[in-house]
Amino acid sequence: ADDPIHPAEVARAWAAALPRAEVGESTLTALGADRESLGRATVLAWLRAL
Image (tube, rainbow, N blue to C red; front, side, top):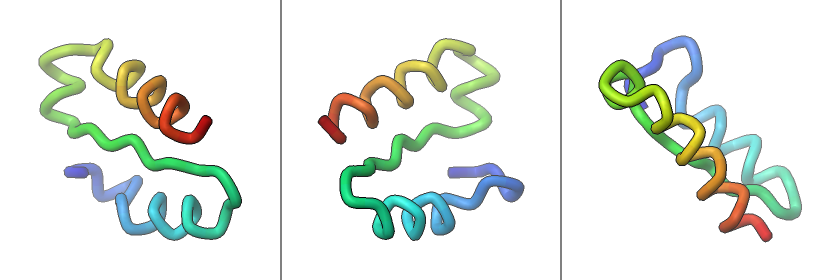
């Protein structure tokens, strides 16, 4: 959410264009504090898309 290179609005637009997609969000601050936070956000989005 705080990454200017990968804006959340673009991810949401891509997800809206796909039949079964979910967006998982995190922050660079969370990633800096806990490197596994990105993996958790990814897995949670994947589970929501099932």
